Length: 260
Image 1 (spheres, one colour):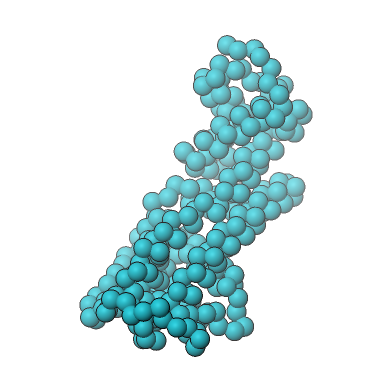
Image 2: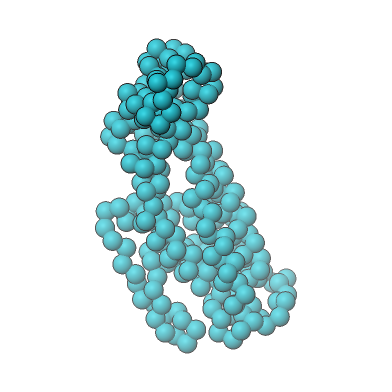
């Protein structure tokens, strides 16, 4: 067993990282019951040989265990933007197949982007343990008895949402520009992104309670049925509300016929 004294910052980083690992692996249990000093200390000692005690951290790094738990949750909440990283690659892969030569073909292309991205987002959330953890953190922000802890978690959530909104806006802005659309007045691109994120999260909450069966819609290139998730349908509805054809758009060239 090592007895080397670690600096305050080193010990804090080690314990927060171990707490994050517990939550990312197991999720957030009621009352953070799986995120205790005792459990984290034991895991750190087993991995590194360094023995940590309450005296090492209480009043030195954190006021109490709840303060430590808040630190761990805040660190995870600030990572929210990572949840969106797959969407840009999916949409980019679609763009080369679309015909943007006419208003009708561009509308079909936009609909297909909404379907593919909406279906992919629904499937990703359904598989994601991190999504359930995120919802637990949101619930914690509401239910924490300490106003100071609530404020810290809420601030971290707000930071995470701002980052993911910026990510969505950058990707959506690029895609709609290539497809010949613009944001309809009086809306902004960020407002569209926030509405889409909120709908995605609402649909994901429903998925926790029941399955999200795909709905067949005759939206294929020749009118054949295609699968649509709840969120994909809602995403298309939002796109139709927030976006409009850009009258100044000049197609680079005609794409494959019926590509969307």
